[in-house]
Length: 242
Image (tube, rainbow, N blue to C red; front, side):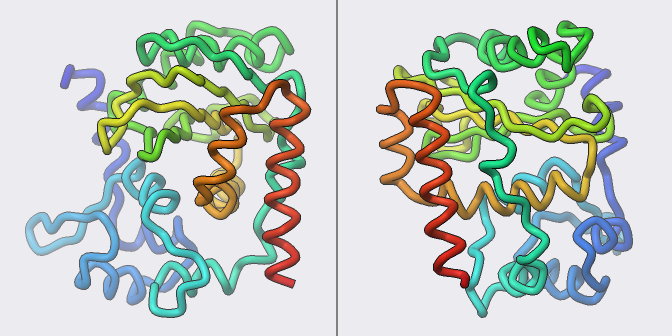
């Protein structure tokens, strides 16, 4: 790990108080989860410490929503009305059905291109650098062929923009996945709000936790089909909740 990555990682270290504020729960709730090993953390000199990128990944990859025996599940149920409908964040111009396999940087460059072409990202090179740096800190490839790339600090995203870039790599590509399997579905999250960032991650988890949906997305012939698949899945979820 180079010096730049080490310095960036220092900025991501969070205390118990900061994690509680970040998750918007009581400190005693986080402490209880830490003692039970339900949240990624480490004890340093008798104090609990957390790494923000690991907390973000944990929210998406480890939580089991609507499970009454799971601490995070109860938190999300209490706040479910605040979740953001993902289909409102999808647009044809930001769906890539033919993402080409390649290095992590090459894949991310393809995902950033629509943002640059739309004039949302002015400095493509700098934004790409931030995404690559995030992957060096901790991969956003969650396993099961899915990755949710994003820069480490949502507030550094373009102001007032909240959207998702969907990239589908049918061949699959090595993106450093935790299960060492090829990654095929990429969901690049772009929002300048940490609050929205977490809520969107929660909603994405509900949607993509469906192997059948993933297979349909990989076979989707065009952007409209991709958006419709997300919309149908989300509609079904809301009906179940209602």
